[in-house]
Image (cartoon, rainbow, N blue to C red; front, side):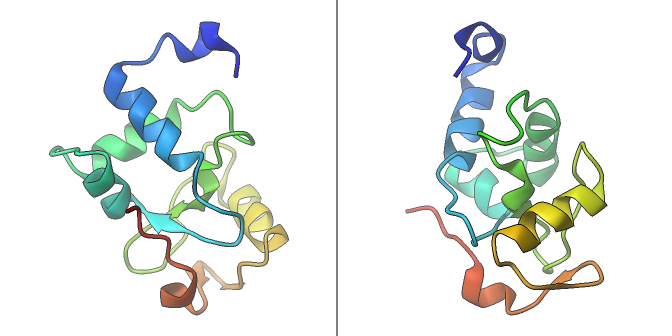
Length: 109
């Protein structure tokens, strides 16, 4: 990764982006799960703020982070692009909802 861009992040932000990089294709996680795994006590909103600053949208796949209720949520390139990327990875989506959300939910260990 271009270290010059990555160095502009706080240690917390780097941790979050590194976690996102490990979400496998065809899987999704939630802002809440990412907050838990990252030790973020500010919660899901803080995670969303970090992801919004992601300069490596395709290397650090923040499109794989969704809302806890299975809705796709926001994406800096727009929801249509998020849906397109997820569908290209085999994620089934109807409207704004992920189908079989529990089967593709990724939990950090």
